[in-house]
Amino acid sequence: MEICDLNAYIRSGYGKGAARRLRKAGFIPAVFYGPTLKTMQLSVKAVDMVKILKRKEENIFIKLLIDDGKNIERLSVIKELQRDAVKGGFLHADFYEVSMDHKLVFEVPIHFAGKPRGVESGGELLHLKRELKISCLPRMLPEYVELDVSALDIGHSLKVEDIKVGDGVTILDHGDVAVASVAPPRIAREVEETEVSARGAPEEEAKEVD
Image 1 (cartoon, one colour):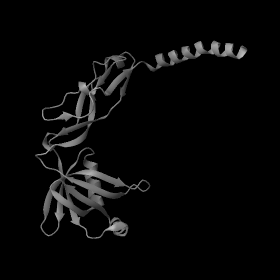
Image 2: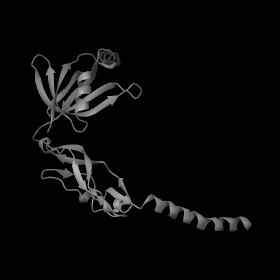
Image 3: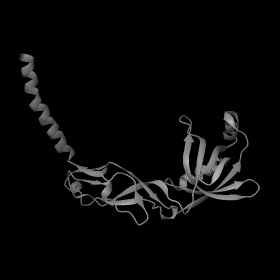
Image 4: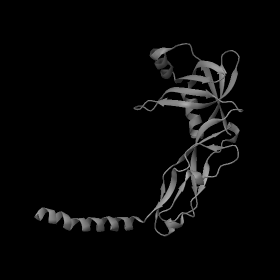
């Protein structure tokens, strides 16, 4: 597991006015909470957050270096990160405490390996699900989950239950959910649609005559 350090500062100002002043000064209002501690009101530098997010997009573990006179270090994950829908800047960040001895729920990306047999026959691979919800200890968190689609033929699909994960990792998504499938060739679908339209035309004309 990759851990990024992030300096955090105790903040005493509350409300929209205080938050706006923090953002104007280049900081993001934040909170840090978890099962074993009281909620802490923090602020972090926006430039530092941008650097962390550029390094890795999925499930970033962040060691908060909290400056409150005691230099506290706490491991966390980003629970929520609010952005301005128009300007794109950060509005607020929620950090959740991580314990190495307790399982957490994560969303991990699915990587598709191999070229489906159906694609070689002209079919089209459809990615129906790109992330998998799992539960595990932080140290057991995989960077991604791999799914081999090479055996997929046209009209066939793979489901969540077909995905294999390591020991200590539990998949929370329902097993019947389709993850990937190979659709018939686009040309074949277009021909089929044309034939259906052609068969329907005489009936419509007959109705008009009647």
